[in-house]
Amino acid sequence: MKMKPSSVPSFVTKKSLSRRTLLKGAGTALALPLLDAMTPAFAQAPAPIHRFQTVYIPNGMAMEYWSPQSNGPDLEITPVLQPLTRYRERLLFLSGLKANWNVAHAGAGGSFLTGVTRGGRNETEILADVSVDQLLADKLGKETQLSSLELSMDAPALAGACTVNLSCVYTHTLSWRGKTEPLPTEHNPRAVFERLFGDSGSTAQAARANRLSQQSSILDSVMDKLQRLEKQLASADRHLINSYTDSVRDIERRIEKAEQQIDMELPELEQPAGVPSTYEAHMELMQDLQVLALQSDLTRVITFMMSKEQSARPYPQIGVPDAHHPLSHHNNAPELIERMSRINIHHTTLFTNYLDKLSAIPEGDGNLLDNMTILYGGGISNSTFHSGDNLPVLLVGGGAGWLAGNRHLHYANEPTMADLHLTLLSKFDVHVDKLGGSTGPLTI
Image 1 (tube, rainbow, N blue to C red):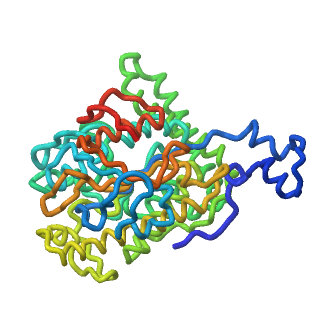
Image 2 (image 1 turned 45 degrees about the vertical axis):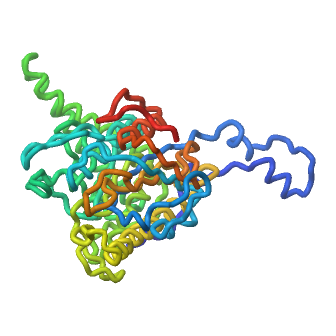
Image 3 (image 1 turned 90 degrees about the horizontal axis):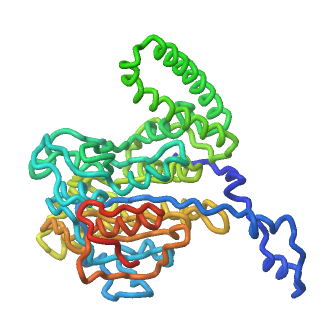
């Protein structure tokens, strides 16, 4: 289901006039006075909103079709990168990074954002550490209704064994709030819509306002009952409702934020009925919802799994009827690697569609993509060996000014993903001494 075109919020689209543009349009070299239309550019231009996203690809990569042969500036466009050619100036290719926990598919997903060097040792031991997206959500989420979104193209499974007798949690999510707190992903567009806009049925302003009014009434009732209950409790028992009260206050904060944004005009999107029948239609709808969440500043942190680790999804629509996971164990057979590369290329093609959507949203003097840092990649390189060396990693976007693209950086000293995460955190002014198995930030 596609979004209907609509006007974009004034705070996003309202651009100030530059003196250079006015002088050129006037056909004169004379200096012009400072006009009101110029003022935002010189004095009131808001600082760009920096957002973080991870787009995860499973089951390794056909590395022969992914890796550039040359290093440095003027990024070599390989077959897998070909769909991304028009975004060359927004691509920073990183090579030489290692996985921190190299235990088949469990380690690939479990350490990709956490940088842990080991996790659980059996089906029931669920162990990792706080992930980089959640460290960012702790800071950036103070300004938004939702601290983060955890999304996937597959139904979540946080129980049972999925790989080498380890919990399925490692193959089905990337995000962790703490050492034993994995965050489940959501794959149903209807559920994602309801999390973003409630069960309003539409992103139309009237529908959102009506839903917000209902939520406020319910919250007022809950807070009133909590206050009456607290008066009846002994002081020693009042701590029992503290955490619940804190949760209610967080909802109150989100409602206040929503009230501030109620006049925002959004592209109209009807509430989805459920999961579309094709992978591509499902993908487009999930991408539309992510763009809406970012555009409306409902969240500034998203993780999105294009598929889970060990995914057996076939791709007959691109001439690959093989199940993805078995195909990834290609034993280095050239014809099988070539077939797997078609899946990798299909993923970058779909990712390019997402970049098109982001770059079409004006923001400040640029667009939404300019103010994003997107980590695209996976936790396995050569999947035949479940290799955690030289992981396929790409940074995409403008990084709100910090990310310079059209480059390939190769790290010969084999730093790990955790070292990259320290670097990314610093770009958001979040500083930690250590994350997982990190040894220090990278030079980018």
